[in-house]
Image (cartoon, rainbow, N blue to C red; front, side, top):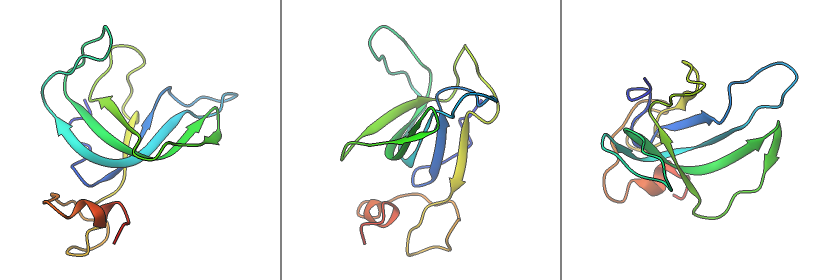
Length: 119
């Protein structure tokens, strides 16, 4: 469902739960550092393709939470429970110095620093 929402280098928001009135939002925001069509197996679960996202911001129950340096998450393209169209949102394209701000891009070796704001 979300496989074509973002590319490597794009900034995305990935919700843990569908937003609803009376409950604070729960999501991460970060930079897509990998995009996998295959399977990975966290603990006892198997997900189809997923994004590997370098976490830049974490919100839990509407409150900003601290993140760890180098923290990343695997967000599956599709889940079987509480799936909805806005679960993964592209916030902006890669911020590479070689392209216009907001455009999609493919990250080459050495370009990740540009997209992570480490110029």
